[in-house]
Image (cartoon, rainbow, N blue to C red; front, side):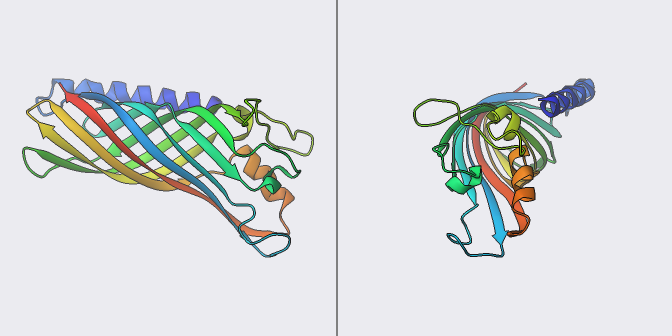
Length: 229
């Protein structure tokens, strides 16, 4: 939660600085909203193939949800409301249980630097580089009970908000398609890596004789309708 608040504070500070340029005739603010599709993968490289197979610790999360964005020409800020399904081998919990799959609900705060290039009066292309912070509010099992996750030897039943929050570093590209001077459709695609969450940090210590490395990675596709002022 503290990391999420730090990201939000940084975003608003940056927005204040950029907003001061509004008096420049070339500086135009945009607002909009749309939907996103996302994939989040945790890939483990293991030494041992017993029991199970070399992918037994891998996890996958697929999700979708609405988001809102605020564009300040060279900076894009957004907040999303992702809904996803976390799939993993039962061994991820260090005991046989029915935690997975788990339905997850959360917030995603994002801040991306962008460099718009006008291709034509109708199209603007821009590379993106920035961060996401995923704040998990809830994870539920099929029977709608809260899923629990291991984060330490003494805490094997942590809530999603204590176990799954994560910081991402991503790069991507976007395209604005204009219909007139103000209305546009924005499409974006991102891919990147994230820092391990609390559950994964604990599991890396527990599995230190089994794995070489772990790579959390994933991508997003977003489409939105925006209005330029």
